[in-house]
Amino acid sequence: MAKKFDTNPLDPKFPESVKDTQPELETVTLPKSGGKTTKFAEPLETEEQTRKLGATEFEGVNPNYGNGNAEIAPYQPQQFYEEAPAETKTHNIGSISLPENVLTALPYIPFAYIGIIAGVIELVFIPKSEPKVRYHAAQGLAAQIAVWIVLTGLGFLSWGTDVADVAATIFSIVTSIMLMIFAYKALRGKPIHIESVQDLTDWIEEKITPKS
Image (cartoon, one colour):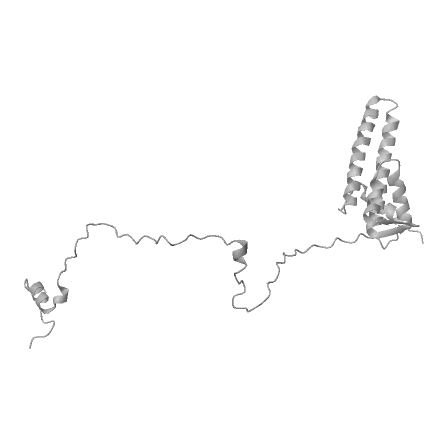
């Protein structure tokens, strides 16, 4: 009895026998459509474009769909965190109360001996429990003393030559600008360290003790 697949593929009559037994495998020629692209139907003329609702039309729209008669919450703008300004620490000198940043800046002022006087007063009245103010008072006083010593030496030399007089003028201008910069930085709370007068600063801070 012949089986379903009992055929020889090399047989030249094999394709024809397959067509007879399996007609669904017969080659089908598709109809020619002329190669034209099929277009979609044109939109209806009654279709309206998207438009914005007016104020009167928008009132009829319920924004709380599915929430019943829930009230519309008013818009609340986002509140950004604002850091509270740091409180300025104050110190009392006799009956006068001054902010800490002002006290740290005064000893560096180079005009009319303001820095020297302020430095001495602060070291006398500010206790050792306030090391920041005392440090700037001692350092500002040490810088003022160092500038005064150099200017005094140049003043003696200016008696014999005009070069020393010019050098003293230039040195006075430069050091005054530097001291004013130090005063501004101290007023802004920035750290200041003058390495050249460090030893004199430590000595002054140790020798001038606060008034009990």
